[in-house]
Length: 248
Ligand SMILES: [Ca+2]
Image 1 (tube, rainbow, N blue to C red):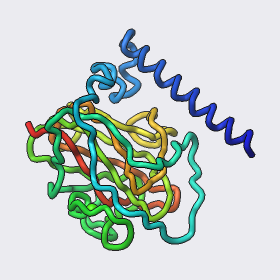
Image 2 (cartoon, rainbow, N blue to C red):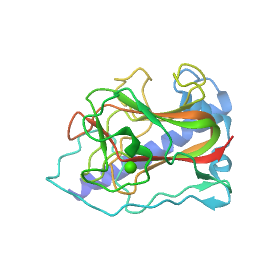
Image 3 (cartoon, rainbow, N blue to C red):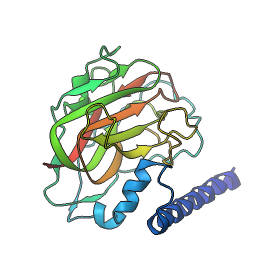
Image 4 (cartoon, protein in one colour):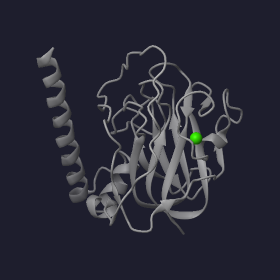
């Protein structure tokens, strides 16, 4: 078993190096535009400088509350679960833009909970804190009410059980319909089951620490998040989504 574990780690490192090489390639050649919008965005700006800034982004991390029977997480290339809150640097003056903002969805009538739960500031696990959307590829969308400079998106789908959500795609746009001027921040659709093309991001385990995405100062009024069920069941869940940046 030890050898198995080592092999996995070695594989992960190789993947990281490969990703780095791909980004370098994009910066130099700029040829692979059709592959993914997120790459184009990353290549356009110098990654460390863009995400860097004088301020370490922090937020309230909810307490751990694991319930029920654990279920196997069967997805390839799973990112190991974090043991602490993720960290990125953001420019000074970055604030939480999404608190209390209106959320819409492809599923107007959630099975459990209300869409308002996604921006109400509560991130606890368990009943009363999450919204459950129907099966299949569904989205939720936060309206920041003005085109903003977005530096980070922090996401909690569900953390009372270790699981991974399928086809997590996160996009920013000034177009409420997401037909024009769309920047893709994250896409872990590894088997091309969505319309967005094959994603290069890894599936990840849900934990109380959430998933923190560096938005690198992307401009937009709307943040849209897709998912298509998870490794435990076919439904879609959100506890909270936080969008950080500067208004206007
Ligand atoms: Ca909430």
